[in-house]
Length: 149
Image (cartoon, rainbow, N blue to C red; front, side, top):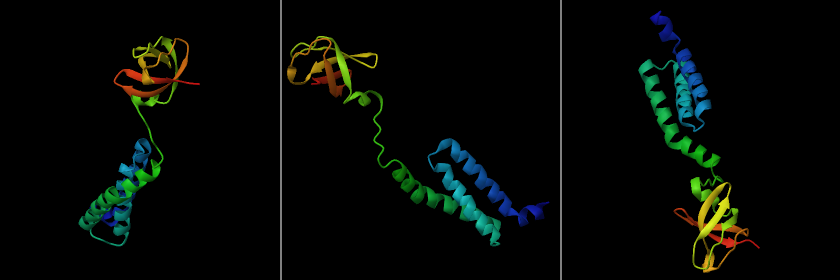
């Protein structure tokens, strides 16, 4: 039995490679893909008759090199035009409606997507309820708005 396993190590590397590829489908961040590539390189080494300990070293080296060089390149390529803003910063540039008058140099309220934000106007101008405004900045829970014309 042990002789069979030792003479067919390529099957073990193929299984590891396939398992890593299946796991990569669940994550999508190219981390596990690097181990699949390492297993594929070790599979080739096994078919060439390289001893088992050297196959493990080849697997480790190929995986580390892939993590260091291939993964960052793939991530940059995938996310090169991906400017994702998160949380409250995503409202900047959006159009809302004044729900409570914003007096000159004072605070009022702006409704946007079911949320009601404390708001101040650009340049201290007065904006009245019902007017449409664009959110131009956010500081903590206070948004700065300008009228939309």
